[in-house]
Image (cartoon, rainbow, N blue to C red; front, side, top):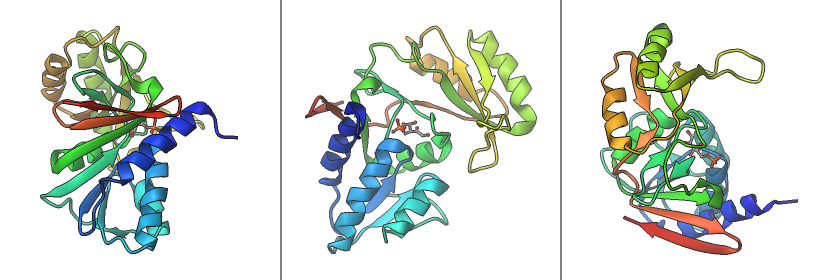
Length: 228
Ligand code: 5RP
């Protein structure tokens, strides 16, 4: 039985796939909402749509391959027409927290090469202020994780090293660790983003600012658009 949030993800994914046109280079995000998008994109490809996809994680690459979608995996193209990705939180300025699935580094590289970044979400993801109900994921070089964690504490964050369900370290596709950093809230994401980016050993953080062009949110059987 599909619950209401899954239905909201399906609605957002169905809407986003309408924006994919023949001949496009398409960035494909990661996460449970994107699984639906890949399914609907795969259906269109089987019906003759010709696209090249740029996956943001190994898992997404496997899902795309299973759908018969052509992939570029060697290097991110300089120009990606449209990327469809998920998010853990978004605010009214379309600032995002991403990285709940641990794919934030490749997601940000792909987003930064994209003309039109479309975010698809269920209704739980919309917030007034980022960070109140979700810890900010930060990707770190394994050797540096403890040092980076101490520096994040000085910024009033509470970093926790992400573990898998068997208690082993969560390792990203690039071989790094994730620190999930709880802040009381992140009212000034730009300021925090600048401070985080200056920490040596921190590879990338999950604050996505000025990257999303629009958010498509499913809610109670309807689709809502937020544009910047
Ligand atoms: C992965 C991400 C995902 O887009 C984010 O976690 C949302 O995932 P879901 O659609 O499963 O809620 O940033 O790194």
